[in-house]
Length: 418
Image 1 (cartoon, rainbow, N blue to C red):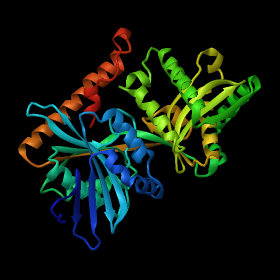
Image 2 (cartoon, rainbow, N blue to C red):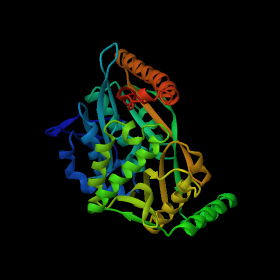
Image 3 (tube, one colour):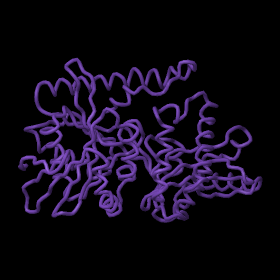
């Protein structure tokens, strides 16, 4: 596979071509202002491929506004025969090492937030798209390493990326290809009633019994808030309820755990509401909101980000958390969703409700050469040390016991999660 020389076509936008029967070319944008010219095509491609919300223009642009400071953007738009067939939004970061700063390329949205990365590229051109991207990042941007993840191991793009990396052995080498956690998905391809029938008889009986108890005590309704002043008001109430629920168990909660999480989340809600993608589901008992489910919708998928509920003996007797999840799924199905992307992590209560747990996979590729090799080794090694010593030992086990010492997650750990 040979690549032509990189030719500048306009300020900060570069085009490369790959020799094949049908030309596949990559155009690189270094700002979202420039990339806005392909926004309609980008969103159309996401719809055509049933792509992930996390790889859409709107989501990536909001993420960049909050976490792009002191980083360089590289949005690689791949075309075949003039048609947009892939978009790979990446950024370049610099991480300190004893041998100078390592230049690292990662997918937009892959740190500071929890999201499953599923690159938006047509499967039959994916190997060429990744090869072109690696060629630019290593030859033009001179990055030391490229990290792709966390990606769902079920996505075909992971294999394409690994194949493309392997084809560039003269310039780069795969140094990591491993599982990196898991994510959960609820499948409702047979409709909500089909989902209920697939539950174990024990879980189905528990759900119906608790729901009946709740209905006997209150008039229970579900609705969804999507836009306007009501969304502003209800999202503020959701954040407050979510934080109160976690504070009750002496934890910080999402909006205090993750740096800039409040500002970022508000921006997401306000921006994506304009494209009808926000779904704030409310569960009401006698007109009182007892649970919230913060979701987004794209295609046939609901993306369940966070939830909040009232707690204490008065509400725990109704198994409000589990009953609310199933009722949220019923509402999502009436809204056209056949799948609920339920986020990163493995949770027993989700699996008991028939969530499918899929492994995540991450690939790290380094540029050949002594300095890139040493910088990559240090960056990965230091990241592993922080993950063990800081996150798993201190943050998970010790910090909750030392309540006065609880602090938001370290940025240095977040940036080095490989």
